[in-house]
Image (tube, rainbow, N blue to C red; front, side, top):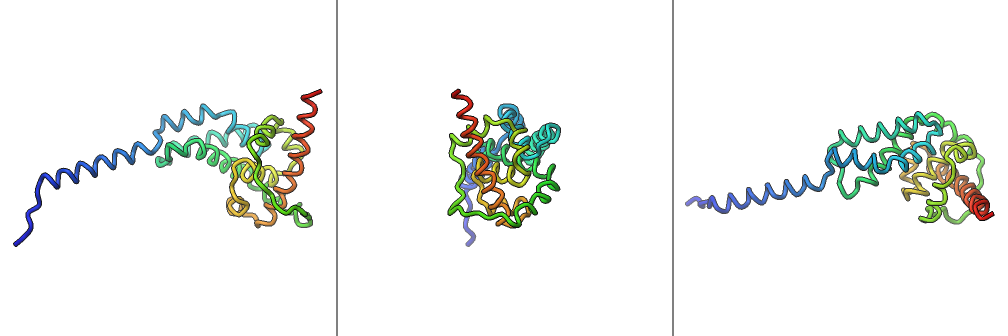
Length: 197
């Protein structure tokens, strides 16, 4: 004898399935929310792109490219939207300056680092770094050091993740970050002292 499937049970399961689909859709950001987050954080996103590219037009284009990518991606979690915007902008900036970043690797073949660790920047250090002029950062740091500083120092990506993203050996990313960290600590301190005078 074949079991009889109740239409009530079938209907309930179908309804639950529809509710789960609707709930899942609500987890993803709409194109309007994506545009809104890029507009809201534009200055900060532009700063990141400018630090990496050292070029105002490339920085602007990086933010635009990241925004367009986000709006066509379709599956950006609403809870991660701001982090996604920062990461997408940085990736677009890296693509725009890929050759200078790769060329900078050779500067670190003889770099000697005696630090026991290369920790990420704390919030107050990130805020102090953001007060510095991106053109000053670009003048004093090469593209690899700037990019490592943004990804590892500010956004707390691992050195290994940075190396994979940049397609650069891990040791060079670590050495470039070491260089950036030394420069940042000195520059932030100098900047703070100049403000108190």
